[in-house]
Length: 164
Image (cartoon, rainbow, N blue to C red; front, top):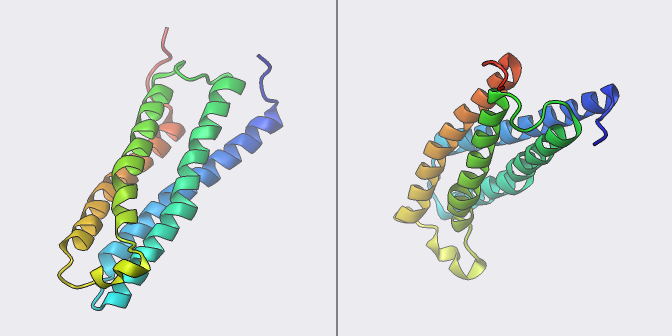
């Protein structure tokens, strides 16, 4: 199969870094919002939930999915491959794991906190589900942020020897 040219690889690397930054910065922003803002009234709870959903839908999800796509392009159209180096294999496992955790755990927690107009009365200070979802998002989001940093470090250091 034909490989990307030198300029093509540079463009791919730039895009991959932009998308990884979107994913990481979006996650850090969510964690910061959840740890520094304590809503006191229903409209504050609503706004926090909507802002978190917008960050997730418009920054984190596109960043993660685009990282996955550019990673596939790297694997197919460059000499890096998918499993040629252990550090690439580890990156793949971590990336897919984080995307699955985000899709099936964190995404529903964030989405479940945005109520419809008919259910707007759910924004009360005794809504344990709302605060539990936020707490779980902070915990797993922090784990994901650390894992994303590990993936970045692996990309830079490229540890371990080539598989034979």
